[in-house]
Amino acid sequence: MAERDLLLRALLTEPNQLMSASASQWDLLIRQARSSNLLARLANHFVEANLLEIVPHSPRQHLISALRLVDRQNIAMRWEVECIRKAVADTEMPIILLKGAAYVLSELRAARGRLFSDIDILVPMHRLADVESGLMLHGWQSLQYDEYDQRYYRRWMHEIPPMRHVRRGTVIDVHHSILPPTARVKVNTEALLAAAKPLVGHNSVYVLQPTDMFLHSATHLFHEGEFEKGLRDLFDLDSLLREFGSKDGFWEKLVPRALELGLERPLFYALRYTNLILGTPIPISVFMAAMVAKPVGGLLYVMDFCYLRALRPLHPSTDDTGSRSARFALYLRSHWLRMPLHLLAYHLGRKALIRDNETMAERNDPNIRNV
Amino acid sequence: MYGEFQLIDPAEFADFHVRLAAPSGLRRWIKPQVLFYFDGIPAFKPLPLGQALPMLEWGLNWCVAAHCHQYLVIHAAVVEKNGKAVVLPAPPGSGKSTLCAGLVCRGWRLLSDELALYDMDSNLIYGMARPVNLKNASIDVIKSFAPEVVMSEPVADTTKGTVALMRPPSASVQQAQNSALPAWIVLPKYLPDAPVSLESNSSAHTFLLLAEQSFNYDILGVRGFRAVGKLIDQCDCYRITYSDLEAAVLTLDRLVAECVYG
Image (cartoon, rainbow over all chains, first blue to last red; front, side):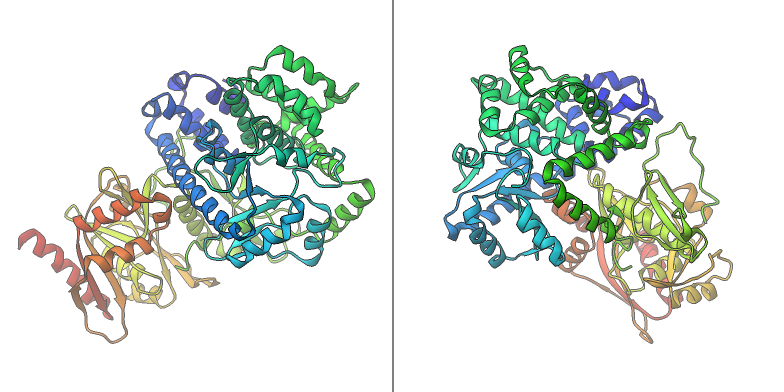
């Protein structure tokens, strides 16, 4: 088994295929899964097949640990959504949950074995100020950003700066659209909001309708410039397609809806790369219809080169000579898609000059407690 | 410090892949620093090169506390005698590591001076028998208490003051894989000039302290609540106040002896 394909092979084949894996293969598998944010998904893969017991003792401990974390997050996510709902209740504004929060509260398969770090919600632009003050009154504070960042977010982005709850430490991203207003792709946000569906059993909490939920997640991934969670997000898309695809009308509505919202290009990429990388079944007619957004000329080859590398498990063992340049090219592309060139030049220039080395290194504290 | 530990074959499964190395660039020569890499990625801000050894210890603690939710991970020292373990949970500054080192120097088996791994299925505790972290005045206390112990050079000016590591006894290292049955939970408290006293402590208070001193009590939810409850039920709960280490060690020796012979 090639080292590079270890994690994908494990997640895409029957778990009992791994019975013969060696200790060093288990070692690498756990590391690839952890660094790609897919350890709990791997664990869940065994649990669903009722085969967690076939995993040798040592790697099994890491899978069990990841499952405990997912269990906890699912409970915490529901509680957090309830807190958010109460905080904005006075505004009489329905909130729309996006991504992980939507998967969990809709009880979708995509939520199984998925870890998340914050909650994303979508509200109409004209109610943004009300929602923000509601959250502030209930203990959420804008994370410390300098004035430039505050201005950058508020003027050019489709979300306000992330807010953290003072006591629980949970982080919420409040969006008013799914792409920045300056983005090259113009999204029909009104149509998106108008079609949101209420969540059964939750007052004033909504999720996007299935086609839109998929299109949003696809848009998010294929406008993204950093890929720590790239493969995890691709698995989300795979789960959504498999689950929604078995329901009436989803496939027929998907491409027309993408055209209506202006999201046909991310849809094309989402279908192409879920199918190429994860073998997601897609009806040929849908694939053909989505070809209207196929990049022209040699661009598709370039995109294939980049995405087929950037969407590998994020681990040194999966890199080849092109991986670094592929990720860098997609990073530049994500900024290019986000705003016109003169704004981009100014923003990147400023970021390069005042580069703050906020990396993973700064988030962990070696003094786990003052002991 | 780790001389007694066995190296595993590179083809074996390793729980964590960590490395200490200097950052690249000028920092190699000017005020050299050290980074703790977790599977190839720096996990913390760099520290001065001289603090490499404490950084390794803190980094390993983080690996376990942040990734091992198959256990209830309690911030406590654990030592064992006659097959039964004493758990010493305590907030910083209570003299937990000092008491732990003192007991280990008098023949108790070291499981951990820092992280008690409580297996919620078997109700047994695991440790790793890693070196004991001593801070500030404790370093000299242990040096005079047990002159024969091997200690690292003290490292000054860390975030925790001056720290030194005490080498674990080889008998403890050889049994590092073996669990122990928790029988006592003893809350240590160092109080200058106080005579040694051992009093029973209420289950309720001990419960709250254990919950507070667990790294993943919140993550484990109901499971964590039940685990702490079960651990309390398994144990007699005490608190010990001491200033003289020798007297404290004798008191705990007597506690164990009473249980065996009494």
